[in-house]
Length: 264
Image (cartoon, rainbow, N blue to C red):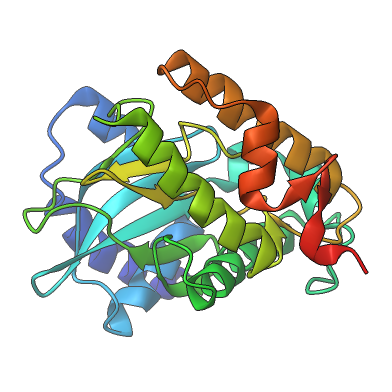
């Protein structure tokens, strides 16, 4: 086992050495997320020809870091969940009641693996419903690989929080069209929809971070839907939109907090 880990560490350090990470913050990222288990996982992904090089950081969250990966000349996003800092109580809340998963709640590694697989399956489901999200590539243990959203030079798109749309009304209409498909075609509720989780890519909305998204008949779906609608209203009001809560509900196929497509 030690030899296996040493080999994995050596191989992935080759990837890390090519990341062109120079600052103290970048070095901290490396020490924070590359534990032995993650190194082994990255080695397996590299060995399966999913990944050649890790090439810098896209974003840092409370529970995961997103890095740029390269395979030949194509960029990918590599999302690595940090097992040590993950909120397992929150994960249990969103996974409980989802028939796609049946896991032991006291097994943290199993829970992380299920969480990553949940995000992969949600992205797959959304892609199949033609929702504008990053397409999933593969998931293994605590690592998710997905489509890179950015330009051909590897510059990632920014979220709406940091890249205000030029035409707010046009952008929110596009976003609500995507949200309609998310709810009514993919039968999911995002659960954390805000300017932090929508990218502005060439003035087109791309919805991201769907690990917490739940199926529309999940026990907490209605609560999460209400939060999403309020977040969209408040966030875009700050950006200059005059759209009302009722207009948002009508646009995405919701009435009095209920998804119209679910009514019998």
